[in-house]
Image (cartoon, chains in turn orange, yellow):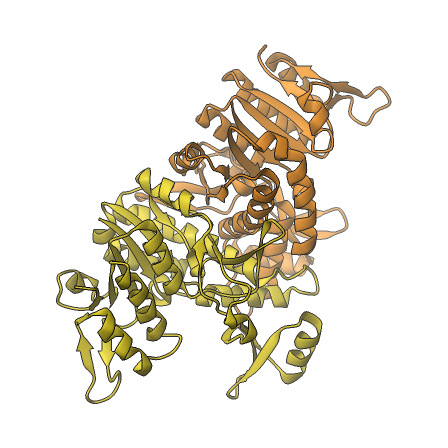
Length: 298
Length: 298
């Protein structure tokens, strides 16, 4: 059975590299039972890491040219990939590799007209004004904390390196791919061009799972399951969802948090795949059907 | 015929991402005839890029933790790999992929006792003193420009992701690997650990060529060929070198420049491979035997 396993931010840790490696060691111990055999692709987020990298770019901007966002996303694929690769290889006793992954987006995606994803450091009103003028960025005020750049979050359409991922998986390697949702690119003049956007990593993971014909997508996040009436007194943990039930639940889910996960699961369920959403603490029980939320057709 | 093609700094460019992409476009047009068919792995240096990244880490160090050098090397594999991948795919009409690559080094390599490779920004005497104390770095004074960190440059022993590179090459993809000489790692307590060192990219490329059983290694550098009495009035361009001739030439070659390239070529020649050293301007003529230097047994 082939599997795509999507790791959220809390599975990756933050802080120094040593702190991230410690978190990753725990994560890799928890996921090792899933990763020890079969065809496995691991994807991951990059929120704190890309934020740090963008801040580094800004602080050195007078001395070395800042890289565009899509290259900062690329950098985080390697930074996180290098740490995850060595920890997961040790925990699973398998070969683990990391393939740089670009993802096609549509230049006419509505997201480009409505950048909505906040990213990078906070700026003063004056800095924000200058950045809008000098770099054509869009910035929005974030309640009391200052101004922050917002970028589009377009839908992922195709995984550029899909054949490469297939070749690596077929060779027996656990393959890390689509880090941070992938490096967003558009086709123009016969070549791929990076664009300043970020792709939701769960949507990219569901696309990858569909294209690979994977049987299962596991999304590891901060909560052990999906809930009805989340954080209300009548909160209710959901064990199973059909596509129709999942669709009906969407309006009450938090945008940019659980909602894109359920949307990703829905896409995948409609092509016959099943998605398990859980935390890595609850993963063991979830694999036995006693925790987590399973979204599938049947 | 399978080929490893090693790109030097001038093939990659420097400056903004747009400037680097322009340089890469020219490079990829020049190498396209070599890359259009057959099994090809492309390696590359990362000098300016890792220098920029280390400077970014330092300038933001009060706000976000600097990454260790080995992760900065990883970042440059993705940064350069992303740009090179899209430009080379456009120039060659082939699938191009980039695999994150770690390279084993020996923790007892003599280089660890004698760090010699200067890297990253310049510091004042006071900053240098603090960095030596706080981070256990070694720094050396560089004639009039300040103090600079020096790191070990150990010999590459094995390519960790060799099987992955083989799988990608066999699948028909031009594969970018071993960027910046690879991420240096040692084995410790059953896992790979990154070490703060840099590996010479030509030595790593020759190791990769040997392990892949490649027929040919092409090293693209700043000069069209290897010379006897380089930059003297009696300078003489060398068209062919046997291993013995190459070995005899070593003492007069510049350390950290042409010498490691000839050493890499020597290693490869002794296992039956041939190495062509040339510039990308002279590549066309070199492929016809009218420029460049060929090091081989025959």
